[in-house]
Amino acid sequence: MMMIIAEFFVVILKVLWAFVTAGARWVVRPKEKSVAGQVCVITGAGSGLGRLFAKEFAQRRAVLVLWDINSQSNEETAEMVRQIYHETETPVAKDGPVGGVEEVPAFQPQVYTYVCDVGKRESVYSTAEKVRREVGEVDILINNAGVVSGHHLLECPDELIERTMVVNCHAHFWTTKAFLPKMLELNHGHIVTVASSLGLFSTAGVEDYCASKFGAIGFHESLSHEIKASEKDGINMTLVCPYLVNTGMFKGCRIRKEIEPFLPPLSPEFCVKQAMRAILTDQPMVCTPRIIYMVNFMKSILPFEAIVCMYRFLGADKCMYPFLAQRKEAMNNNEAKNGI
Image (cartoon, rainbow, N blue to C red):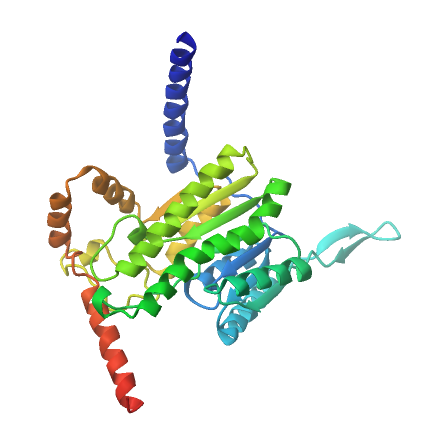
């Protein structure tokens, strides 16, 4: 009994110390780790946040492996990466054969592109095998690919619901199963889950998207505990939960106009900068902006009716309705053009 009591007090001290160290990160910025020469796989790299992640890792001289379903946009990202490699290339001084100093080219990272539909398990596994064969073992996995159906639940075809769940959630299982075994063997790696604030709290009209992001976060958290339980301290996990990002994915989404100036959509560049800071300092989770932490905490302790009242005050209860209306109008226009 005394042993349990003593261990309980040790746990309390560790919990308090965890609060102290977490608070210190807000005051003193931790040193960023180097990812130069490390192999980084990014899903959904052809546009949006995926393209920005690729550019950020390229500036830090990582070897980029870009996955996307769209070959053309993926190649466009690769060309941007090559340009960054060229601009950041610096020669290294080396002793010459006659006692002088000569400049030799520094390590030149490369970028590889693969067409992969992460919504198809076979495509993920076969592409992962190609990466291991042609590039080498993966050090960093960025699970970024995502889709949204843009329909109210009762108007959404089952195929689109399944597609959202598979791409936004199930694909994380498959990419992780493909690359985690070697990370565990080497006790080295980093897995990043790009989720959403809509995986922490929800809103009306995007049931499939919210469910997929809740699932992705649940998967990430469970996997984090599994890695901790296996005592593989060389493998890090980072969960990225941004507020609405201005990538066009939710074009038309609006909260109450009086509140919007205080909580505008995030610029994609700012979102990725914050995420990169978290990744490079091995931060377990990053919510952008920081008020998302508070909203998530309040959701956990407030009665549901209180949350509904807050949603209505903020205009968050129907914030997706303009987006859904635009999607529906666009679909009707396309059908009219095609003579359907």
